[in-house]
Length: 387
Ligand code: ATP
Ligand code: MG
Image (cartoon, rainbow, N blue to C red):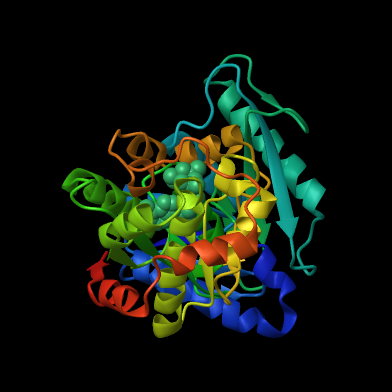
C-alpha cells in the first residue's frame, strides 16, 4: 500500500468550518482518484492506495485546496530501522550521486522519544554520509543550500520519511465557497478568470454566446475544449451555449452603432443573470481587466452591470495582460485560446466605441430594440453541454 500526505493551508484558518472544508476536499480528491482510503489528522490528510500512478499525481497537482503533497514511507519508531530505510530509499530512487549535498530535516512530535530533532538529524546525516561516501565522490551533508532534503517525522503512533514535496495550486476546495457562472468567450482572459474563482473554492459552470452562422462550429468547439480543460480543476461542469445572432442583428439594426458593444454586453449579462437565477448560481464571473478595451473602462463596466442585480466577480480586474497570459499558460488554456476562430463580439465591431457611455442614453437606446419575448425565445433555445 502506498501513502500520500496531503497538506492544505488555508482551510485550517476556518475554525468553525474546518471539518466541513476538509470533508469537501476529501470528497473532491475521491472523485479524482479512485479506490483510496483516507485518514484525516489535525491539519492534514493521508490517502492510501495500492499504487498511485502518474495520472493520480497529476490530478493532485490540480486540485484546488491542496497546497502540497508528498509520497511517504512508514517505518518502525527506531533509529537504526529508520537509517536502514533511508539507505534503501536513497539507493532505490538514486537520490545521492557524485557532488550531491543533502540535508536531513527531522520533526519529532513524540516527546517520549530519546533524542531531540536536531540530534536525530545529525545521526542520520553522519550514517548516510559514511555509507554513501564510499560509493560516490564529493558528497556532503550540509545544513543549508542542499540539493535535496530528507524528511523524517516521528509521531506518537507512527513514523514516516519522505524526500519530495510536490507543490499543488493551493486555494480552497471547489464547492466550499459558492457557485459561479463564468462568461466564457474563446479569448485568453475569461478561462483564467474562471480558474481563479475555482481556486477560491467556487463551483464554476460556463455560459457562452455564439452567433452562427457568423461564428462557426469550430469556434464553438474551441469554447467546449476550453471548458473541458477548466473542468480538470473541478469534477464536472456544464456549458450553456446561447444562440445570440438574433439579438445581435436586432441591436445592429435598431441602435446607435457606437453603443453596440455596450448593448451587447448588457444583453449577455441579462441572459446570464436569468440562467443564474434559474440554476442557482450566486455570481457571474467575467474576464474583464480595467482599461483593457473600451468596454472595460470604469464607466462602461458600471453601465453594463447596471442592467442586472446579482454580483459580478472580475478576478482579473487588476492584472496586466502579461500576468493573465502567464496564468493561461500555466493552466494550459493559452494554446486553445489563441486558435484563430472568430468571436461573436468581433463580427460587428463599432469603429468608435464609446468609452464614456451615459447610462440614461444607453437605456433609451436599448428600448429601441429590446423586447421580452425575443429574450425568452433565445433563453429557451439555450443548449446545455454536460462536460
Ligand atoms: P476574453 O479574452 O475573455 O475574451 P476580452 O479581453 O476579449 O476577454 P471582451 O471581449 O470585452 O474582453 O469580453 C469581456 C468579458 O466578457 C470576457 O472576459 C468574457 O467573460 C465575457 N465575454 C465576451 N464575449 C463573450 C462570449 N461570446 N460569450 C461569453 N462571454 C463573453
Ligand atoms: Mg473576447
